[in-house]
Image (cartoon, rainbow, N blue to C red; front, side):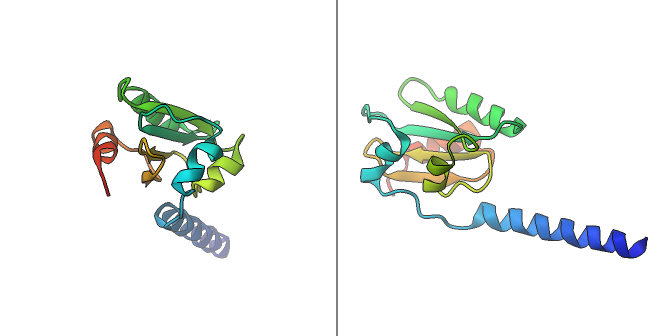
Length: 129
């Protein structure tokens, strides 16, 4: 009985470690000239916030609401990572919610592998580096 409990605890610890690593692992997003092609969208001169979600993700619902609240000067796009795994893979999405901030020129300003507040998204939208 104790052996089984120890095995379960070890598996839980490994899973937690894998999730922690996945959320912090640097991923190389699509190059600027391919971002719009990967998304299947055309640029419209505004920056873009892409929210990647999953079907049973409560935090994803919150993240989409936050992104929609950024205003008309920012375009938002919601992608179900399970239904569009190729698009998710192109942006290095390993967990949801993941939010990608894309500058108007198509370059990726930030990739957030967690729930991000409005103020942080606004700061990322203003970043030039």
